[in-house]
Length: 368
Length: 267
Image (cartoon, rainbow over the protein chains, first blue to last red):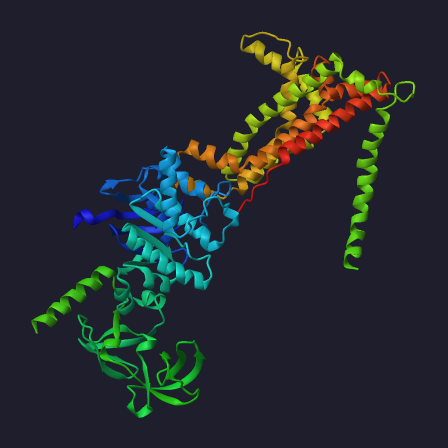
């Protein structure tokens, strides 16, 4: 299992002068052949992590390992990683072929080898026949592909992608999401993808690191993070959520909005104050008398696939509902949900404590 | 209607160009066909191709070339370091300020510095080399010219380097290039336009320097500029002076055409 690890961060801190640290004692492991996403709002330190791996900057504290060797002092040109830049950083004075061949020419490969490899890389990104084009003649999506070809042609162990889709329009972006994922599967090398777009992260990744203020808030598979966000920040950042205060009466029983509900979470202190999360798509509209919650419809937006309905309950909590059924603004409706839809979050819990608690009460479950 | 009203704004420019650019050139061309007695002749052009003037032309080009190359070798690293400093605009200003001082003043200052009892010679005396003839040598001529032209070369190169997208340098490193290779393959080719315009700005005036040749090199260096000045002011042979000017103009146009070509698209 250990030899699967390709990159390891050990309490890495990055700080410029006396400013607050951009990264604060971050530790994580990256395994071979997986698609990772670093997700977070701008300024959270995700690009800093990428630049640390690429070797453009050095950590202020901590150790970075690539293949179990400390690489803190290894310059970028000596590392087996390649980057696809946000602005692609294609060389404007070279044509497509020479851009892709750049790394191979540095390695002083023979001309016929270079030609064969470049052609292969361009075929991989569906740009056959574009060899002699100038960069300025290429569209945004095509430049993107040239940048990817330029990275993969060097056969690196890891490819770093710094928000490479942010400059593309929505349709092209969705298309490239499929292509990138497909490319990663075909190549079988590690991709580390940086984005602030949570949908992109959920759609593409094997594993997501959610970052905020220089620390990793939560890491896990897209479903883990979506279904069991560890705190308010993650719940809010990943998808839409209804977050309301509640009290954990006892394990598997939570009180909020003036009522007590059955739930599937445990491991809390009795009567502990908690926050509960219910995703808008888990709320179902029903008649007021059948609903677990009685709410007043405040406003409604048509979003194409669904209606986004904003409601208020008597306690003043706001509830966002995604429903394919229409509601009438100003009417009273009932909302119902499954016990599994309630996710309970403890205040100020770290990822480690969260995992421990989850393990503890799940074990308890099996014993019963 | 629209184009006509737009053309109105062009009038001052057109008048300026016609009066101060086109007319003087035509006058120079006109005078080049008359000898010292005001007779129409091609004699001036024939004279230009005699060894005296060809040698002068060659030496003009040679000195201009030397000045340009030396200026470039000093300016590029300077401009590069400037882009890396924290207060680059301030440093740039400090480098540009000397170019605001009158050329003549600077020339006289150098006469003082390089003179027999000047600062340079007393320094040489102190370190034990002893007094040397510095003024009125090729060295002093080139030194002072380089000093005067430096800001004009640094500025365009600095601008080109400053506009260079830093992620291109990262990309080059990322693809395995060392710093030197990155400079050769990415930084220099992409700042070539700045180098070219810097060379134009230096080489073309350097071709026709005349004040410095007299003041600093004591007429040991005779360039086409000196010759023109002498013909107009001393021998009063306006025709020959104009002929040399015509060749100088042709040379400048050629240089502009040769160095100004090939515009690449910059992202």
